[in-house]
Amino acid sequence: MITKKTLQLNDQKISYIDEGSKTSPAVLLIHGVPESSMLWKHLIPEIASQGFRPIAPDLPGFGQSDRFPYASTWEKYVAFITDFMEALSLEKIHLVVHDWGGMIGLRWACDFPDKVESLIISDTCLVPGYRWHPLARKWRTPEVGERVVEAMANKEAWMTNMKKEIPSVDEDILEDFFSIFEKEETRNTILELYRSANLQLVEPYQKLAQIKKPVTILWGENDPYIPSGFAYKTRDEQFPHATIEIIPSTGHFIHVEAPEQVIPFVKDHYQSVLNQK
Image 1 (cartoon, rainbow, N blue to C red):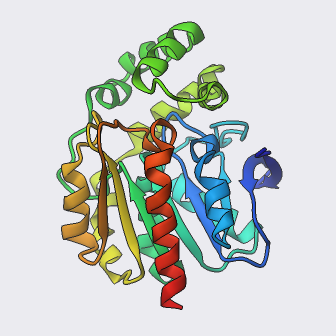
Image 2: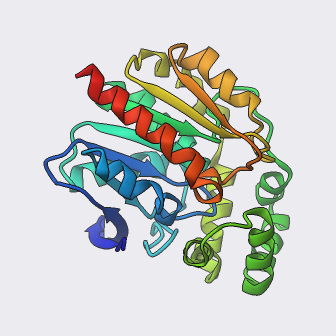
């Protein structure tokens, strides 16, 4: 049974999962939109069983974490990682990212490559040339985005749509994901984040090539938001030493759609980390 803890950070309540021994190497897992730390429900026990300490925050505004008291911009989420790590006295981390968690976490890694001990990257993009998917384009459009997130606050309809997209997902995971839509102030978090995206924040992406530690790239074969071709683009432009695994017959949310297919690759990744020591 995974339970969430809370801490006060910059006068905000931050909810997070923290499993494993406090003396074990830390694994920081950063979720995307519209997700929460429960994205990692199936991976966290497996990572802990390998002798690591998985830590997964609900990003501000998501799950049970308070939203920022100011605009929820990309820059603020990047800064949040540093603040969160300082609050938990984390010096170096193994980083695991998905969706917007990759754009946040990898952008943070551009500034702190020496703090990254290994990377697992899935269904995300921090390379020039990515075109926003249709829903993202709506969220980025003033007035249109507001109408779209308000419509998504219809829980019954949202849950029905998500169960079509991820038929095998656990109900408690979707319940946690939906929490961001329950209030207007947290719904606006999504709009603020998407609208804050700009090319200047992508420019340092080449700094990721400084990270020579183990990198595993996992992707859903049929991801409708970020096509699997970006897995290879990420490797070719940033991590030529990375291992790529495409999860067959899966979409965007591979960790909760097909955990039984993802977990072996996660275990292989951390075994490779241990074997290098």
